[in-house]
Amino acid sequence: MVRGELEGMHGVLFIGHAKLPLGSAARNVSEILALSCVADPQYGVILDVSDTLVTDSAHSIIKDILIGQSLLDGLDSAIVELHERYHGAALPAVEAALKDTQAQWQRWHDSAQRNRTNDISAKKDYGPR
Image (cartoon, rainbow, N blue to C red; front, top):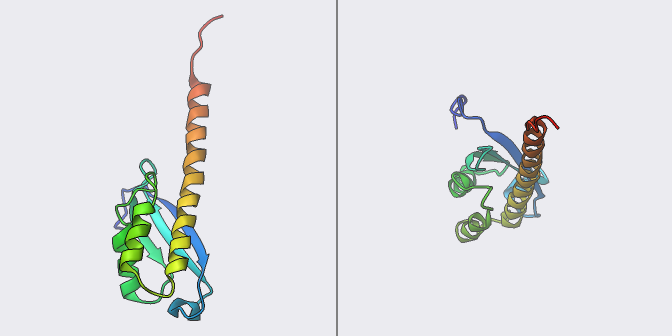
């Protein structure tokens, strides 16, 4: 996405990491793959994706698979599609980074839900006793 394209959208950034295998092109740049997803905070719909893979075609496939997926629903279908469409040496790392991203989102979502519940409970008017 071009800078400013997410303007007006209030996405939340989640970043998953995984160790890249020997033999993957990205390993020549870094030992760790980072996969970042900007997601809608209410439904977890992925709005934008970036990664530290090396080739433009790898970036394109990953974005095509993930944008529009919902972290709220889980990424199982995205992982199935990843295995169908991505056949690079970094596949296990991409899958692991996706799972880590999902876990990051789940922790945030659970915490946000608890905070909302606590806020609502604190604001209730219990009236005179």
